[in-house]
Image (cartoon, rainbow over all chains, first blue to last red; front, side, top):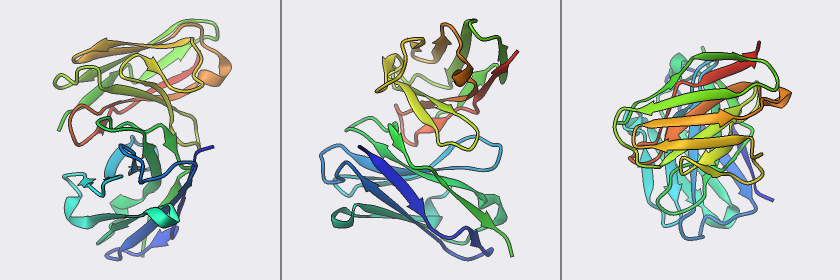
Length: 121
Length: 107
């Protein structure tokens, strides 16, 4: 059974750095082709892809947020960490992590429940 | 970046009726198109990938078609549990991008 779960603060202040952790089970991030990504969704709005880390430690970022994002993996702990610097109220959203199942295809077959992050002073 | 659009924004359907949702890409994505369903307060669920391949456990009443820039998700006979927001996503070119969604609600 594949599961993913996001954890992190529910409230951050403007200009602070957000750190979110995705803890997963049922698959390995050392399996060829597998990746874990982050996607966010502001309240009432659409989904926005943020970042992906692949089994070979390649990393990809949203061009519009590239300078603010860092994604890392810890294969031994089955965790992926996303940091987003310089948070702003417009970054208020539910943040999801999800599995990318195989090489060459960046869609997401299993998702975490999401974690709501509010940016406010 | 490839821009995805979806139509209609809202679709009102009676249970048992057929629902047809459209998704368009600003340039060809070949068949690298996925569909997701999202219900209020829940994470998205993968329905279709490769434009027409069912994800695990997805009922056959959901079907996907299309290639290039025009895609369709059809729900052959809408069930009560099918109401929600449906998103398409292209993964032909990075960054992967999502459409704005189509809300399917009860007529």
